[in-house]
Length: 263
Image 1 (spheres, helix red, strand yellow):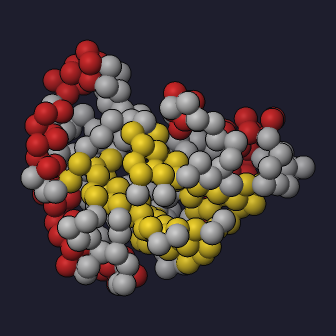
Image 2 (image 1 turned 120 degrees about the vertical axis):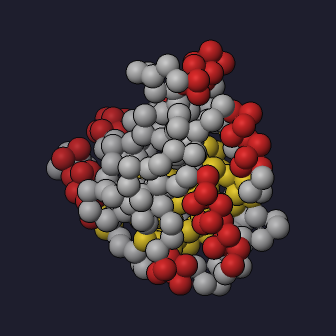
Image 3 (image 1 turned 180 degrees about the vertical axis):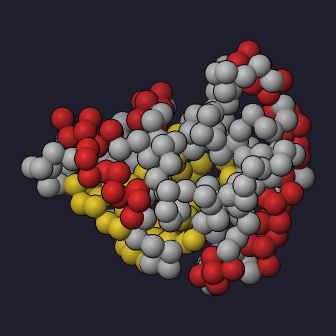
């Protein structure tokens, strides 16, 4: 399983164009820009598609022509910019399946021409399981304040397993129950706020991130061989060297946009 991190940033990215804090200044000076979190798996499965994702794929030397399924976590703009459906419809007539909770799927409808029958809209809710193009997908409940339901995804293909967990705060008990029996090779877990106090419970800090990883270890979903990577990073986090060191202290990694992870 090849996992390309198209973006690793929070909704406003890093740097925030309106901010001169040390983290934003460092990113601006170094050119280490983080765009909205999105992941391309094996060039056929896309997890979240915010406004930057198509351009990021091209910066990585990829196209999205082979994508057959898009898994959307929730309806917030940084995770779903449905205008890509119109742009795709101008040039690509291959079948595509959009999967997501009801509010996200509803946002897609206005961007599809009536004759654009090659795009299938599939509504899911936490607890659902489905198979798309040979990938087994389990839909998990997120702890997040969205326009309606927000979900996370566990994905399995040819014996390899990925957990895509953004946006979310501490696990809902049902999420851990649904993950019973799953052991992951790769966990992409959001860590938005660093040492800051989130305005709501729908995102992680350093402390809650570490607790969430411990919860996964407690049920056997994470072990010594699992790679845990922080995504959905914002400028509330410290400078890169400190961020990297503190995440490493929790056996977690930090990577820039366009990093290719081979599972």
